[in-house]
Length: 585
Image (cartoon, rainbow, N blue to C red; front, side, top):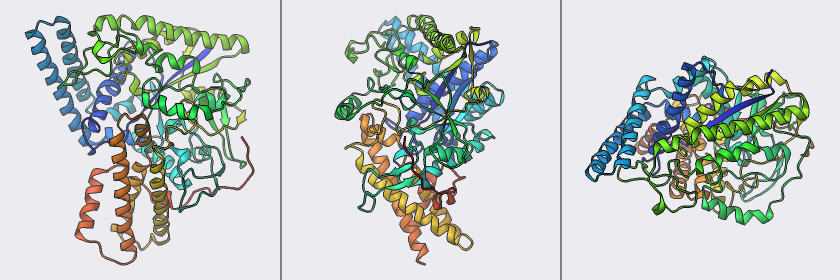
């Protein structure tokens, strides 16, 4: 009998970039993630299965990412991207031969092989990444969760209807792509808010008045979601761990503004991330939702670019690229070395570090689980959630590390790999707890998404939410007689709202990693929503649309052609309205 259970969890998400730029921000993000993370992930799964292993990996794929990977325009773009990278490697090879640079030549040949194999692997799955993930789930090797439809930051959205739409669209989109209902969800940014009287952080119609809001857990329960994942500090209190501070200098500066105001909750010694709990923030008889907590002991070993395995000086450096092709030829060297000081990458040396790093990680997992078993005389779970793009995109050697950890855990008789849903069924938790409001990251609250640099974004989000609900309510009241053209316009307005509320925009603004792009995208989606809503108002008032109006709608629909299953009713009314009650966390 196992003395502990281990769950690797990978969060797969990118904002909607189709038809919204290519380089340096836009489609190349999606192509890079597909080449360096999604296809290698499928590859290591198939490799382990072929070697007789049962990987039992839990992932989520955000609905907005599912829509992009399934879109024909991505498939065409991705093939072109891979051919460009192959051509770049070939040109680099010729230059390195010319200048007698044998190690750089070996690296260029590595890239030629890597991108050539990636193209072959993509074609081998019929250019259907989502379809291959579905097969792995149907075969019992992968458990796929869903995520908020466009990764909206749920605690700060001003309307319960918008939160409801993020969850309902996620469930319906999951059924479309995977042929079943999801069991779990990755809450965007692991952000949670309980039921309470909420005050908007920026004025709505010039007011900042409190009103009762449903807890995020209520929406999950109502839509058949069994579990979600949180950072450990939401469960236990104490100091939260900021996983991105060492990657983004702008976040360190931003955190400096909030740190003096941050007071960690007293740690609850009775709660542990080794157990599964039920969460409820409602006094009603709704089914509570289970919650798994990220393990803080092992998280930084992988997350941290400075203190974790990716910071090993032998691994491939993420930042330094050779132009015009953009391939990478230099090693990390040291976590704080300047780009000019980076030494040449040696692939064999880098790969030789994987056995030690993977064994160290597996040992840390085992020690934590054995310690819990010894103290409590029962097995616990260690949940290790990470952004999937860390494995392969940020950390080139990461997929091999992932494979080796899974194999080592699989071969250890004291630890069992598990899907989260299987473990939930195994332990059948009965303890119902309440959770505070918060997210991942240093301080555990909203400062990354709500600060002086991003405050303006919420003003426009709140105006759009309010207008969308008004238009959807008109649709509900007149749905038997409403013009089909108006329905199409309203649905496109709803799509623009959903893209507008994506949490990616505030994150990119706060980190300064793609600030101009994020500000432009958010502004464009608001502008598109505003014109579509004005067109809807014209039709409601009996006015005719101009040819320019219709052309504008067609262009919007062609550009932002996601979620054909969207329903206006999600924005018209809250399915289970909020009930007033006193609640304290």
